[in-house]
Amino acid sequence: MTTKNRYDRRDIRRLNAMSVLDQLRNQGPLSRAQIAQHLGLTRAAVSNIVSELLETSLICETDFVAGSAGRPGLLLSLNAECACIIAVRIDLDSVTVALANLGQEIIWRKDASLDPEATPTECLQRAETLIDEGLSVGHKAGLACFGISVAWSGLVDHEAGKLAYGPISGWEDISLRENWEERFSAPVFVENEAHASAIGVRHHESTRGADNLVYLSLGVGLAAGVFVGGSLLRGDQGFAGQIGHIAFTDNGKQCSCGKRGCWVTEIGSLAIIEKLKAAGVRLPDQQHVQEDWIGYVTELAESGDAKVASVLNAVGEQVGKGLAGLVQTFNPSLVVVGGRLRSLMKYADTSIRSTLMDETLPHMKETLEFKISDSDDDNLAGCFATVFEVFMKNPPLKS
Ligand SMILES: [Zn+2]
Image (cartoon, helix red, strand yellow):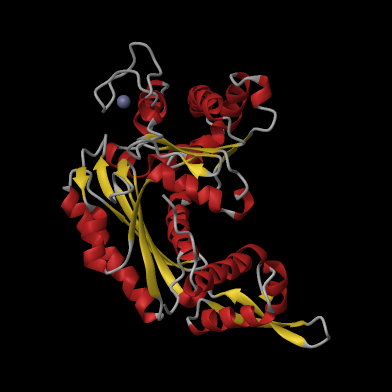
C-alpha cells in the first residue's frame, strides 16, 4: 500500500502563513525582509503571504525600521485586535466569564456567585447570560469570536466537550460543547480546571520552556495538570490528574468520593477549615466562611497569627509530601501550586518546599523549581491559550 503524501499549492500557502504567524509570535515585530531571511523564503513569496494576512487583518503593520539598504521598511505584528476569545471558569460556587483580545489581554470580565444547591441547568444559564454579555462587548468592539473555552473543576471528556462527572457537585454527562456551539455559533472547548491552569502556566512567557511541569490546583477539590515532554497528560479517558482521591491517610476522613483518607480530605478547603477550628482559630459566621474565609485567614497569616501559622505549616508538609510523589512519578522541572487556596499557600511556602525537597530523590531535585503561582487566573489564561493555539494551527485564511 502506498501513502499519498503530496501538498498542493493551497496547503503550501497555508503552511507558509502559519510559519509567518509563528515567527511574529515568537520573535515579535519583524520586517518582510527579516521574515524572508528567517524562513528561507523569497521576498516575493513572503510578500504574497503577508498581503493575504494583512487583508484578513490577522497581522498589521506597525513601526518603521531601517532596512538593510538604508531604506525604511514597515514592521509587521500579530494583530491582537483582530478577534476575541471568551474564557469561562465554572467553580462550585462561582462562575467567571472573561473576554480577551487575540493578544490574550482581558478587556472585560464578570464574576458571579452560584448557589451550590442550584441545578446544573440553572448554573449554566447564569454562565450563558454572562457569555452573551461578553460577546456583546466583543461585537461592539468589532471583534469576531474565535472561540469559547471552558475550565471546569470536574472530570472532563475533552474530546467530546462534555462535563463527564463532578465528584463534589454531582454534575454528570453534560454535552456542553454541543449545546453551546449551537447557541453561540462559535467553537467551544472544554477542559478540566487543573489542566487549563497547567496550559496557562506553560503558555506564560516566563515559564514557556517548561516541557515537564506539574500544576497542583488546590481549593475545595484537588487536581493536577501534568505536562510530560511538552504534551498535556490526559490519560485514556481524559481524566488524568485526579490526585485529590489518591489514598493518603490510613483510616482517614470520609471523602465525597465515598472512600476514606483521600489526599483532598487533608489539604482541601474543608479540611483546612476544620483544622483551623480545631486549633482554636475563630472563623467568621458560616455564611461568611462560605464566601471569603480564605481572605480572612490570609489576613491572619499576614499578621503573624501563631495558630494559623501552625496549621498552615502542618498542611504545607502534607502538600509537600504528596507533591514529592508526583515529582518522583513525572520528573518535572517545574512544580506550581495554585487554585483558590493560592493566597493561603504563600504562607505555607517554606513548609511545602522543605518537605518536597526532603522527600524527593537527590538526583531529581537538582533541576527542580517550585513556586506558588502569582495569579488567581491561571485557568482563564489556559482557556485563552487553548483558543489561541487553535488559531495558530488553523488561521482563518480566505480559502
Ligand atoms: Zn476521595
